[in-house]
Length: 102
Image 1 (cartoon, rainbow, N blue to C red):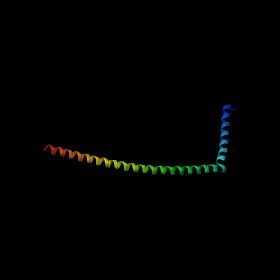
Image 2 (cartoon, rainbow, N blue to C red):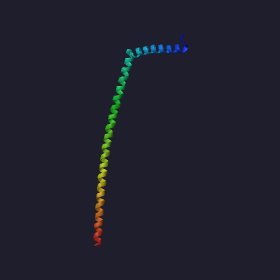
Image 3 (tube, one colour):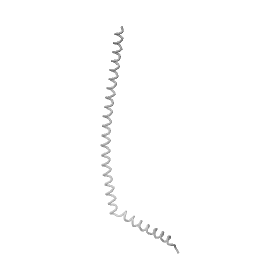
Image 4 (spheres, rainbow, N blue to C red):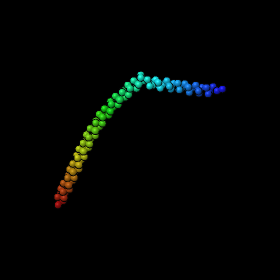
């Protein structure tokens, strides 16, 4: 004779098989397929929305990057001009000192 724990295990196994069989039938029914189809369609719509938003963000980021590069190039050109002017002023001051010493 089987012990109580063995009977419980067999009962659980049989219950699981029955539940699994019923679950597969429920999951493969026409109503379930409609639900899966609608959920998949909603997921695809959400994906399209996310992709559109990501595209807009990427375009804006590219615009910002281009403007930032232009600002940095302008600042570098201005700095180079200042350095050039400072060098010219220093040369002019040095020449003036030499002329005064002569």
